[in-house]
Amino acid sequence: MNAASTLTARLLAERPRPRGIAGRRYAHWLAVGTVCLGAFLGQLTASVTALVYPALQRRFDAGFAAVEWVALAYLLVLVALLAPIGRLSDLVGRKTMYLGGFAVFGLASLGAGFAGGLGALVACRAVQAVGGAMMQANSVALVARGVPGHAMRRALGVQAAAQGLGLALGPSLGGLLVAHASWRWVFWINVPVALVGIVAGWFLLPRTRAEAAPALPRPRPGAAVGPVVGPEPDGGRFDLAGLLLLGGSTTALLLALSAASGLPLPAWAVAALLAAAVLCALALVRQERRATRPILAPGLVNTPGVRPGLAVALIGYLLLFCPLVLGPVLLAEAGLPTARSGLVITVLPAAFAVAATVGGGLLPRGWSDVARCRCGAALAGAGLLGCALLPALGAPAVLLAGPLLVVGGGLGLLLPANNALVMRAIPAECSAVGGGMVNMARSLGTALGTALPVLGVHLAGPALGGRSVLLALAVVAGLAVVLARPVRRR
Image 1 (cartoon, rainbow, N blue to C red):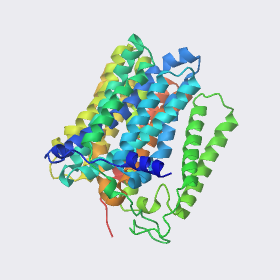
Image 2: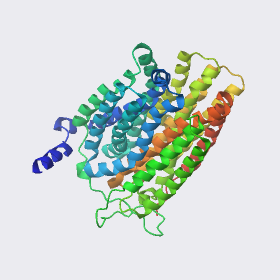
Image 3: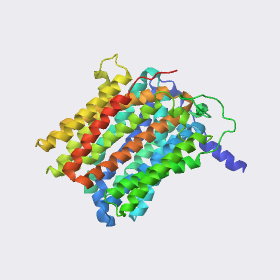
Image 4: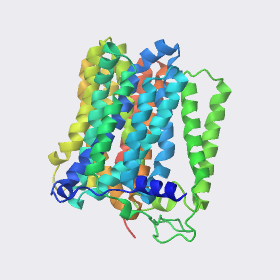
């Protein structure tokens, strides 16, 4: 027993950076670069899998609604685990959990490439999501707490740029691998990146264990505002019921959307799944108010600025992924060749990456993060409106690159500024839990952005359904403008 405890302690122990690295003025940027590897890997996985759907349909003789779960299984596990893993990371150490995420992600990617059936591939993707959650739940916290305050916005912008780079490379890289190698290499390509991430994180990430053992905010009856930080009387139990209800509500919702989009389930099953999603969500709210250590931390959500910030994070990724899914459909409907369609679609994530990195410098220096959020959301809404109207006006399909450029640029301004607002509102001792909740909102937005376009196209056809979804997204972007507002602390 003592030997096992000693081994566990050694595995969980966080080694400090070498003195020659920790003493450098730019040491925090080396840590940011390591976090960017995980951000790049996660978004590359999100965008590259859509390119293998046709190959998987041929290989496993399955329909599109079934193959779509290669992506949805990953997203569901990610949404369910981000918050609890964020809580566990505060106790174990963010660096330890982050490096473990690289290891799990790499091993699951290796298994996915060797999968002999669609079920095995979906299972490997679910395990891959466990590693993704271990990385993503800590990425924002590692950046926010590892750089000086004046550099936080820029560091979060660099991280968002790495995500945009992964999104931008995914379609072209996936197409090349499927065409010249095999769909299996779409998953095997993750393995060397994960190995580099483990080595870089071991030497370049600072220790975080000293910041562990947080006191999470707990809601008080009748309290309208956020956290009261203090010790919990009994340490609390892990909120397994909350985790199951969260997973049940999101799974039921996405299953209902998938069934309505063509998954072979009876009509009554869609209504039953929607009802189950609502009931699980209501039960989750009740459970989180009663739990000693709730996975969603209602007291943290009630902190001024956190709830609208999470909503804007969800909206931002909904606006990002819907055009990525809809774009190829609309361009194919217009008769544009696949190669040129890929180049047009790449404009969106490329503009997102550039704007997230340097776009803020083009705005007036005195603008607050709230003003940047509103400007970015307004630009994204205008771009989406252009995407919806250009095909209706009979414009050449290649001109969609223009409004897609505006959408990507707007989101590149919106998301880093919103992340900075949320992380400033969250107490430092709860940063990993808060970062996990931000990433959970992002992942839920990604899942909805993947499922809703398929539903719209299935119900109204590629042209009308696609334009209707884009018009609805423009309205949702206006909602983000309203939600971005200054925090009034009491």
